[in-house]
Image (cartoon, rainbow, N blue to C red; front, side):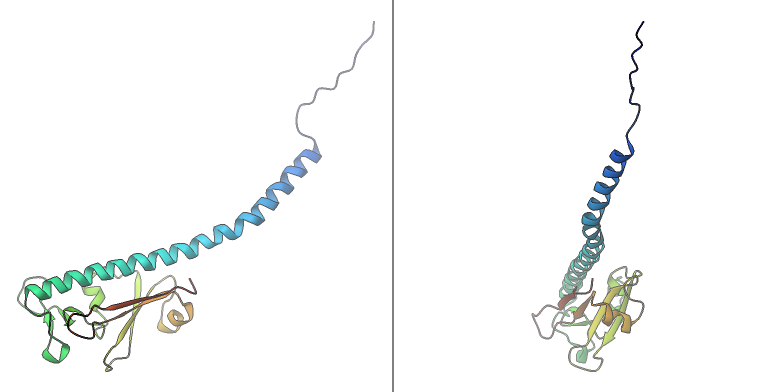
Length: 171
């Protein structure tokens, strides 16, 4: 009677497991930078969305200014419009658009609780509002250093639109 010894393989060998781990390691090194860039893309997309929201809200303010006959008023003419219908001026405007000289101009027309807003150039012909996500910058120094914000400058003449510039080199 001859007994045959057969080896029954019931799992993976150590070499096979090591090879799989090495392959997974190489793939993760290649894929990690791609995943890290996703957060940068998300911050840029958020700024673009905020820019679009500001443009839309500014156009609605302009439409309200046209209805109230104030689209040609500048701050020198005490330009303001009534947003809520109570008969008092709620929002300072400059040629029909929200005034960038008012640090609360954007928060009057948009929910800005997740954003930090800082005004520069007060008293100049074109003050600028700088806006960044609070996760990116909690103060103006951090905002400037982040290079991940947008600027809003009021309309400079009758018929002109406000200027919105995205700064995304540091996002």
